[in-house]
Image (cartoon, rainbow, N blue to C red; front, side):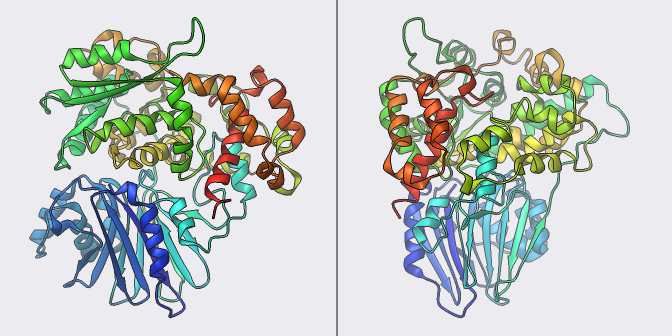
Length: 595
């Protein structure tokens, strides 16, 4: 829901409204229904609205509460806004709108910085206090909604996307060598606060930032994930009952917090199928959407899961929409997807989400999706491998997750961008934080609070919002994640992983979907490094811009190009190393070189 931006001056100058307009224009696709600006002294806000809750003009943003002398720009949804509104009414507050935006303003006035602890939802917002001249920024617990920052000695700017900040101008686009190491080691994940550009930072998830009129700031973490066992061990049946209850509540919250129809992105896997099962009785004529891709060559690998998504659609009598994408369209539309990437992302799911969201947005404005279930409930194949591995927590994690070791990274990256093994240091530090009982508890906490934020969660916001489509992720309800984090690892890994979800699905969805092998269906046009895809990457990596940038060692590039489908030229999880190199260079050419 929406795109936000703003500028706060520290030098007594007026905000640059032309820069704000450029940032807002860049965010237009995130919010096609309305636009607004606000200026007060050194502060200016911009907003692009996707209307989901309270479709009336009363919910227009930027929202100004003259009685409280507060102004707001907000992106996201507060799922428990009705309960909070009722509580605030008993405290004497009055409301001029019916949505969640005004609840944030009143909650901030009532409870100050601690208001975020009361919010159940996905959010990034900024509140301006006209009286104190303070700016308050906040981001949800899992970073589902983005918040990018650019600060100089004279001003702070923020926006819902990195390209929006670039459109504002005055951003240091020097490459961040530490971020590059993370990017090429962790499947293009660059944990907050860094991005690949020195001049752009991200407010970390579960964090707030308060800025004073002179630019001094206070940043706080308001939530952490406890991954320790309960004092009294629960029997399996109680864990399963609690999972079913909490997931049903999470789905209900995300359904009721909308004044428009809500659909489901139905992959054909367990997670999205379970969501359909929980929604079907509550939503007559539930709309579901599936995507598949054309194979490559004779006897090609299957590139859709229609066999299973069709079963779910038929079982629950949904209004089902099935989209099959030819490889030619994938290649033709890939430049659009790169142009919409807020940060470079190599996962094939990025183009899948982009093309699916375009089609879905013509039918509904809100959908639910199954992202997060594998990370929260132990569904990926590498978790048992990590558990069985020997060595330190870092060694057990890295050998089954890192895309390349540090030695190979130094062979790949040019000397000017080389740093020490900063990613190993980062991951070792995250794994060793207190309040996680076992190694796998450490891993799942790291996934849920750090890695998931800048891989699946980021693309699930970024690509659909390019079409004005809001995606809600019930498996990342923080109360559900807290429950799962305290489960014994053996319960999650039972029967091949995600046992609690499989167990609560019995009798609700067909067994064939529950017992099927986990799907990793590809986008064949991007999985196989040949034909037009290979020529595209070759053109990027041999371009004058790439050579002039001097980011990669040419011997390494030439080795990949000489034998692009060699097994050693693929990462453990995310495919071609050649695509990793080409995608970052392409993103820089599109977003940075054209400034």
